[in-house]
Image (tube, rainbow, N blue to C red):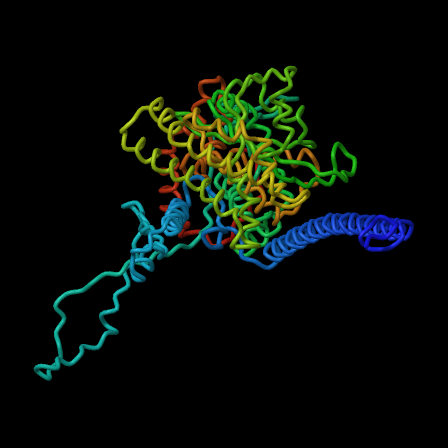
Amino acid sequence: MISNSGNATGKPEEVLNQEIFKLKMERDAYKAQYTEEVKKNKNLSVSKAELQFAHDHKDLIIANAFELIKKFQIELYGKSSEKAKLLDVYCKNLLDEVELRNLVEEQNQEDSIEQGDSESTDSEESKSTKKVRKIHKEQDLTTLPANTPIINIDHTANSVAPIDPNTGKKMVQIGSRIERKIGKQHTVVIYNHIFPVFGPEENYEAEDGESNSLVVYPQIERILKGSMISNEILAEVITKKYLDHMPLNRQEQHFKRMGLSISRQNMKNWIFSMATRCGPLIELLRKSLLSCPIINMDETIHRVLNIDGKASDTENYEIIQVGTCDSWRVVIFSFNVKRNSMVLSSLLPNYSGTLMTDGLQSYKVAVADENNDLNCTHLACWAHSRRGFVALLKANPKSKCKSVVTYIAKLYKIESELRELFKKELMTKDEFNLLRAEQTDPVFKEIRKWLDAAKIRATQGSQLEKATNYCLNRWDELIAYPYEFHATPDNNLAEQMTRPFSMGSSNWLFSNTNNGAEVSSVMFTLAQNAKLNGINEMDYLWALMDRIPSCSNEEEWKNLLPWNIDLSDISEKKALLSAAKPDPLRTEPYIIRGGKY
């Protein structure tokens, strides 16, 4: 029987409506709760991602901090770059060929292992990864001229004849052998310069109011006029100070032990006199520098106490320029109070060749400024670009920086191999440049690809970012060297010429005035040019002092350039010194006071 309400539950319609309404309310409540939970979960996911990003960022910052700490520890307590292992050695100009080859070969071996070279045995793997031992160069024996004095010391009388184990009798002398040792004793020699003295004819008697006049020989001009020493002594002083890093106060003690009373003030005055007379020669060296197709340029600190009579509290600089051409190599040292673009461009007036420098921004500004009249190609140094990655690799040997360091090493390997082929006259200069450009281009592309990827993953302000930006900001200058024959991947030629100055300044510490600093620049220029051209530095300085007073034209000055000078007469003067003997009749000591000559 069906109820009057008209539904199957038998409940009144009003009650059913209330239940339906209640169910709808519960449904909407559950739906709102679900939406709220979804929203909360979404917010939690975003927060979790932010937390994860913050966590990863902090990890990168901590890793960068540890790299910095390791870097500073290595700088403070680690080995110097000259004595360090393979990855600690900076890429010197073709001097570390073995190390560079090993680095490239080691990386190639690792790449082959990663690509699935699993068929090789453990012994073969150990052989392939074994570091190639550096080949030591044979030491050249000392060569002395045939007229070197000999002292024979016979040890025969002090030798006891041994007993022959076979016969039981004493052995007899059947010959002798000679072992040569080198000895040296620095002896002092006195030069007696004999000049004529002229007077009136014989038996002439002066009249009243007159006096017999004497005329001494015509004065012969000399750099050390009136000094008690000869030119070779000053050549020795200059060589010891500017090549052997022995300051004048130590030389004063050295001469004192030899029995010579030579003050450092006297030595300083002699050096100033020498520098003043060498002006035309320095100008010729500077012209030779500017005629070179490439100039390597660098700078180092030169401490000076007083500039133009006023105390100096700023850093001053010694700027070194090394020019290379087919016929010679020349170096110029210049003292400057600043190292801005204006100063650097003034040292390269109207230069139109190639300029290789480190990363100092002033060089780039000087070349780019049209007012400087510099129409030269600017090259950057791969050795400087490499240092940031090497520092990271020292701090973390597992760093990915090993890849880019290996790529840079390949540039040096290419340079070394092609230079060797050119020495064997297997190619011309144009062929050398073309082949070098072809072989380095793929390496440059690999380096650029690595740098672009590193820039993306590097943390802002990290050492990796700094090292990467250093290369990218100088990329055009870094890849331009293959097209200049005399250029190499780095600026080490100029860097190496800063070392003598830096080592010397650590002994004499500073120059008192800017005039003294300029004199030091002249002396460094003369001494280092002799060394750079492979001639005896002391002989060269000696010859300069002998010949400069008689130079009267440019041709005579050109004959004093280190690649033109003839030093054969110095050998004769050395032989004269060796043959000097004391006066057997003299018993009184000599008192040397100098004189007019």
